[in-house]
Image (tube, rainbow, N blue to C red; front, side, top):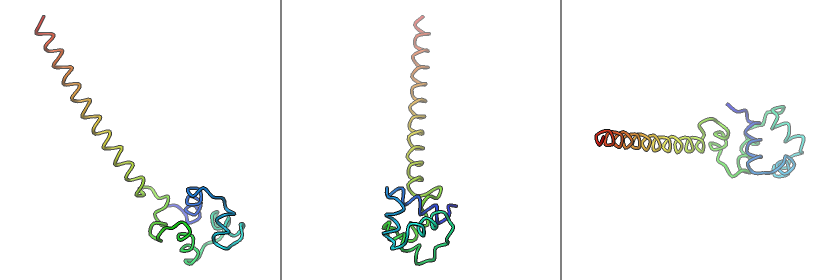
Length: 109
């Protein structure tokens, strides 16, 4: 499970901003924000909610940030699994065709 600070950093990086910009958005100093990201300072509920709002997330969405099995990752994994299934089916069909062609060639001889 990611720490709150790790989640703050992930969101900041996804947004493509630096710590200074985030600190300004929250109305705090850069060192204060840095301490939140590194876990030196534990944020209170109000600060967590404020950071979620800056990223236009609900508190629930914020809590899911960076977790394994997050909705984006789950969707990507599901899509990739479906592609693998499709490719496996194609391989099996092609193997059947190769076997049929081989059998026909053997009968012709």
